[in-house]
Amino acid sequence: MSQVSRSTPLFVDTNAFVAVFNEDDTHHDAATELLDGIGAGEYAYGPLYTSRYVLSETATTLLYGVGHAEAVEAVATVRDSSSINLIDVDPHRFDVTVKQFEQYDDQSISFIDHMNATLAEEYDISHIFAFDDDFATLGLTRVPVDTGEV
Image 1 (tube, rainbow, N blue to C red):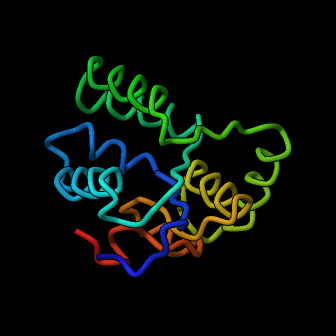
Image 2: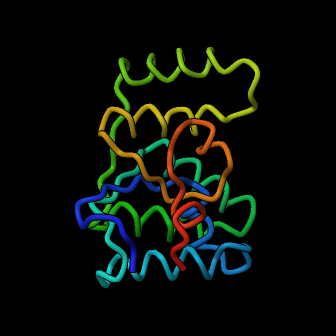
Image 3: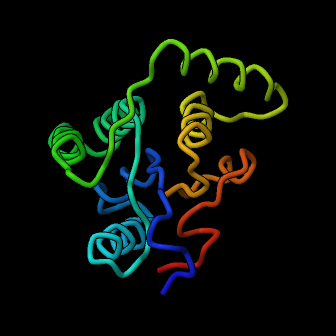
C-alpha cells in the first residue's frame, strides 16, 4: 500500500493513457493495474486530472500507433469518466507554458509535457501518472516509476 495520503492529486499524462488503451505497450500491465487500483481504493491517489491537450495527444498517438477504434475509445472513456477532471487551457495558462518551454533550451522536453508541469504546479499537484524521464527533470514524482507501486 502506498504511503501517499488519500488526498494526493494525480495528473495523468499521455503515455499513461496510451499504455492503458494499447495492450501491446510495454507499460500496459503496470498502467492498467495502477488505474484499476486507484479506482478500487488500493492506491491512495485522487482526484485525477488531465488536460484536453493530453487527450488530444493520446488520441493522435493511438490513432497512428494502434488504430482509430482505440483512439475513439480512449477519448470517450476519459471524457465520460466521473473520476478524471479535464482541465481547459486558457490563453494565460498557454502563455505560462510557452515561457517554461523557452527556458528549457538545453532539454528536449515536449511542449505538452511542459504544459502538464505548469498545470500541475497551478493545481498544486506533485505526482504524475507517467513513465517519461522528462517529468523528473520538471520536478514531478512519477507514479508508479518513482513511487514503486505495481
